Image 1: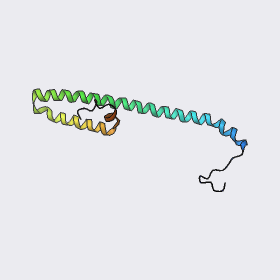
Image 2: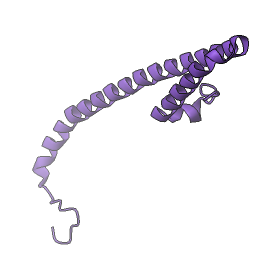
Image 3: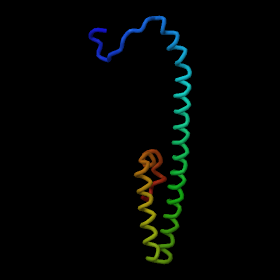
Image 4: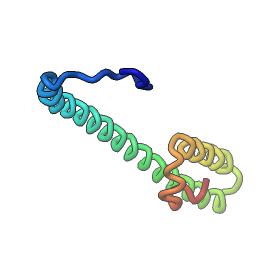
Length: 105
């Protein structure tokens, strides 16, 4: 077509049923792919969230040990804080949606 920016051409009406009948299978494939991606992202989110919760518990315990036993626990505490920052960088959503998880980073 003249003046058409996107370069599409009009198809005769006889092709319309073919395009419509092919759409459900393509849409189902796309939906299946989307569900797989979302499931994978959710699984990764749960793993990362569990890691953050565990690191927070370890930080709290290290802080108690630091107060009780002294400087021997300063190095592990710093390491855990670095790990917490690494988790926050991998998934910045954790800092915006659940700041309690990252309260000690």
